[in-house]
Image 1 (tube, rainbow, N blue to C red):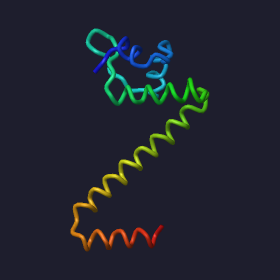
Image 2 (image 1 turned 90 degrees about the vertical axis):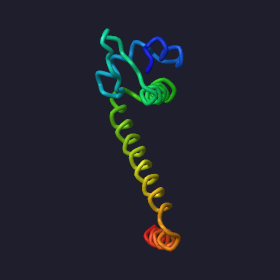
Image 3 (image 1 turned 120 degrees about the vertical axis):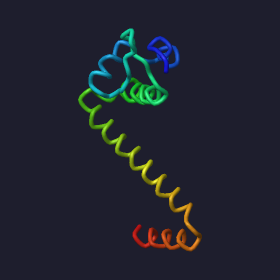
Length: 108
């Protein structure tokens, strides 16, 4: 975990003053340490990079941000689910793999 200073040094275009607002709006999940300072995980850092890309580079408005983040979160969840399904299929015998792939092709 890193603090806000390290986060700002890793992402120079980060509008640092917005971090508490992003946390308050639940766009970003960070933990407060015992001393009251924010601590960020690698997942948080990736989320901050996404937020900076959306807010600064793409200029997504505050009003649109909840919808955009919700859709992106749904997409990431779907990708994780598909990845888990693919791994489960890969663990099966070859004939089951082929049957699952054939059934998937028919449904597509």
